[in-house]
Image 1 (cartoon, one colour):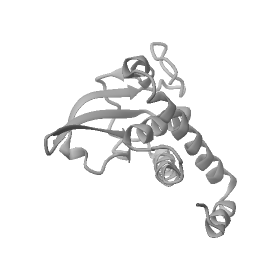
Image 2 (cartoon, rainbow, N blue to C red):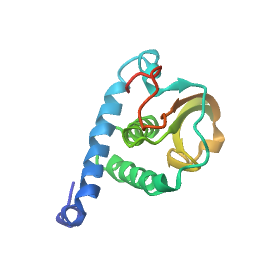
Image 3 (tube, one colour):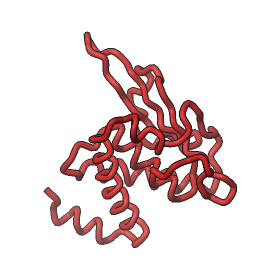
Image 4 (cartoon, rainbow, N blue to C red):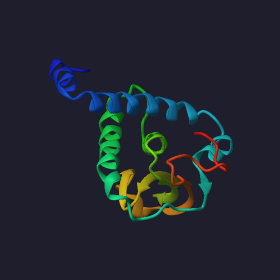
Length: 161
């Protein structure tokens, strides 16, 4: 439950920070809805399969990437739906995409006891936006990259996520 102290903290943020938090909340919901569809239907909207974005972020993008990461982390705690690794990664990818920043979403599998488990994480440049904790325990089975052309627009071959 949101306390008065948390509401006061939210109100005290500047306009840009409040908008980014609200955007993160809405995109976490949108990404959660996508989980109800077969993955084969949403995969094309995630970007180019088995490609990676650059590991060198543009200097001007680093603060934006950190803000997106923070917004996703904060708001995922306040959703009334499940906002775990894949939901966070898809929402973060969409937030970065709208700001003209490339990212790569990784899908991995691993074993826990006698079960096969899955994990997703998102990277932009050398920074991990979501899912970095525990990613070393997983074998990458898929990666999707949202590449941005020089004007901050998507490439013609990509579909909108």
